[in-house]
Length: 294
Image 1 (cartoon, rainbow, N blue to C red):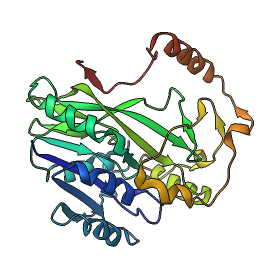
Image 2: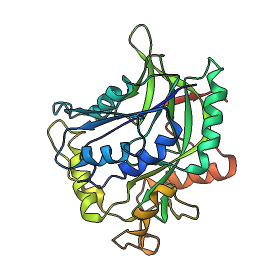
Image 3: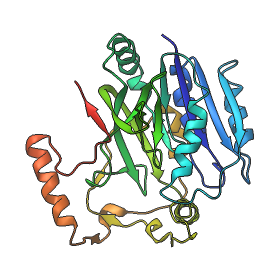
């Protein structure tokens, strides 16, 4: 079994992405790691090269130029993902975004799932549970609007592509239409740190991301402000070891769990959904860009 890892990143230093930690969490699992570094304004390429030097012969790094005309629905993100995916070889491709990190405690389960699913032709990909951090390394977001699971391992050679803004994947049919992947659970988690940055960097990053979703370059970045939204909880587990330094050196302070709750009318539906989930395991209205077969 041969496994490729793939990812993309641009201006990772400027926007304080934990991309080095992400790469270090993925490298031990794969036979090769394809990294698409978007031409940017900082030392991201140098940082990627520094990580690659610790894994001789494993990294395949290349530079790309983003298409600034792709300013709707975050389509440039799937385009950049697919550039890396196209260079992968082997049986499986394991994908992480620049703010996503794997936990070493899950390596064994993930390797076993990849090996077992290889012999099952029905399986297009593997599903991962998500741990979404928000504002702080000790606070997680379990709001129903934060996706609980997503596909992060795909079988190569099946016309599978990154979909829309690169949250997930779909398979291209012979007629050009796209279908959801048939997946099993991997037994692994993705630790998502996209909403844990110094507040001033969070604002800058949010403004930059907004431009990828608006053809007119609009977007206010207003949602960068940390606030106590519905669904925040204290995190009681352990972080991946590669995150230890970043967690220890956190330089800002925000006590979200003691802040006033910002509750909107639409949150009533989310409260009811969480209640149903707690009783049955089913989350009403959950977005699923896949079809489970396990």
